[in-house]
Length: 228
Ligand code: SF4
Image (cartoon, rainbow, N blue to C red; front, side, top):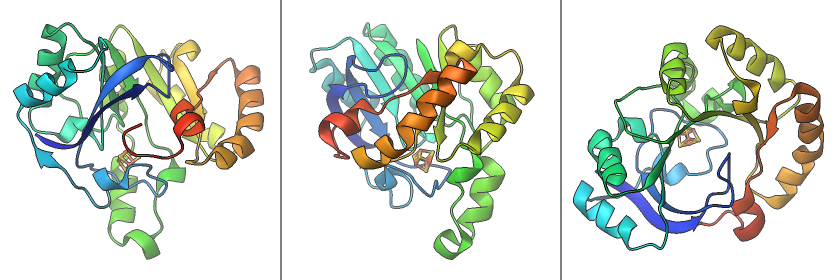
């Protein structure tokens, strides 16, 4: 599998925010978000080939039982099924972080589903053909539903402006059967200042809507730094 990085840090986002975890970041993505915070896995992917056994051996070296498989888009990584099964067999609690545009029979304890809203589409001037391709691929309702069939899941949306909530509402309607306690709204930004500028109004929206506010603890604590 092509792996961008393997590291030990705290989970910065979602239901398990604050939990020390081993992260496996796959290289490669089928989307091109304009605000992508890991362009080295999407716009300019870099990585090295590692076997499933080599990855699990590295993960076992960290003092944690929590493993997070992220990307890029881990669902397009060859061998993702074997990796997630191997991590589970080794006793790890496995979180999968995915944009939910492609489904594979993975093994996980928490499906962290992050459908990409229209605010993610890059302009043609920046992305050329990728602009249309990204927009056509970014929402797959049936794939979202399949990931939601995992007992524990969360739907995490990156929010740039209050207007994005109309699209969230429409998407939740289309998916159907969503428990709002599993819906997390996360401010877009990779600096503490950007998160702060969006955090206040987004927290107020969460309070009004009964959705969860999703911090980005790793940005607050370490800045936007690889390996954190
Ligand atoms: S889905 Fe994730 S990795 Fe892919 S372009 Fe969007 S933010 Fe980047």
